[in-house]
Amino acid sequence: MKIWAIANQKGGVGKTTTTVTLGGLLAQQGKRVLLIDTDPHASLSYYFGIDSEQLSVSVYDVFVADKLNADVVLDCLCPSRLDSLFILPATMALATLDRSMGMQNGKGLILKNALKFVQQEFDYVLMDCPPVLGVLMVNAVAACERILVPVQTEFLALKGLDRMMHTLEIMEKTQKRRFDVTIIPTMFDKRVNAAIDAHNVLLEQYGQQVWDGVIPVDTRFRDASQAQTPASVYSPRARGVYAYAKLLKTLQQETTK
Image 1 (tube, one colour):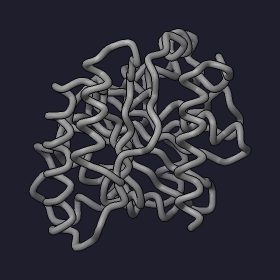
Image 2: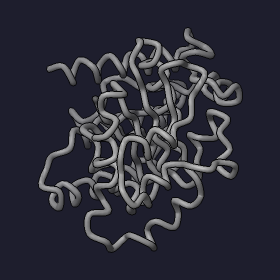
Image 3: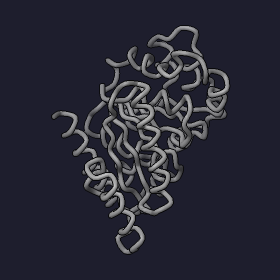
C-alpha cells in the first residue's frame, strides 16, 4: 500500500484538486484507492457531495477510538461514483484535536497505526492535509512515505512553501527520517510573466525536488468539482488532467525504482 500526503501550510494552492485528480486517475487504473480528508473544513468531503455536518462517523472517530481496529476505519468510509475509490471524510470536530490531544505522547501516530489495519484493502492512500501545522498534519506526514507539496506559481505562495519546507526539516529531525518530497507547480499560466518568474524561482531554489512539469490553470477542475466527480472522469481530455496523468506516471516510476 502506497501512502501519500498532500500538504502545504498555505491554502488555495491546489491540495484538494491534486488529491482528487490523482485519486481518480489511480481508480481508473484499477487501483483500490482511499482518500482521507484531514482538514476540518472538509473540502475533500464536500467535493464528493458528503455533508460533514450530517455524518454520524468520520475520520474524527478514528482519532478518538478507544481501541483501533479495521472495523473502526472501514465503518467510517464513504463510497464514491468510482467503484474502487473511497473517502474517509472529515468533520469540524477535527478542529478540537489540537486542544484535546496535542500534548499527549503517541498521538502523532494514530493514522499510521490505523492504516496498518486496512493495508490489504487498498493499493493507495492519499491524504488531503489542512494548511496548519498541528496534530492532523503531523499524523499525515508520519503515516506517509511520500509528501506532495502543491505550490501555486505566484510569489506569495513561494513564501508559504518556505514555511512548509522548514516545517518538514524540523519533523525530519524529530522523527529521525528523511521525507521523499515532490513539489508540484500548480495553477500555471504561461501567458503571465509573474507565473513564469515564480516557476523559475522554484526551480532555482528547490531543484530536483520540483516535478519537471506544471499543472496549468484549467476551468475544467472547477466544473468537475461542481459535478462532484474527479476531473479525470468528468473531462478526461482536459489539459489539467493530462498534466496530472504525467505527474502520476512520474510518481509511479519513482516508486518502482
